[in-house]
Length: 125
Image (cartoon, rainbow, N blue to C red; front, side):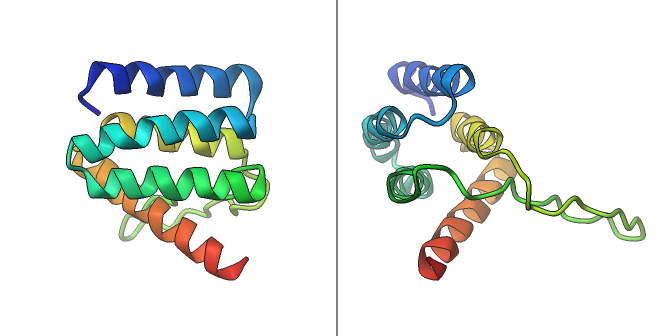
């Protein structure tokens, strides 16, 4: 996000998350306040991920979406830890850090993965 106010708000959300964990009403309000900045920056993917994130937290009082798995390197098979037992606050913090640099190609790919996971989770639950 390029707007200094958006960056400041994003930093505040991450600080609050690290200090207090996922406090539903606070984080939902802050994300709702953040979304118009994404719309203003003409970033539909970012606006959508922010909306899906606060809707998810509002509905489930947590963030049940694990950090997307890295693509395996060809010829190098590594056992990936299962997504069970993941830390919701850590995953949400990672998502917030992706939002800060949403124009980065790799971050955009991972934001899209989060978006797909949030949509799939909403359909299943």
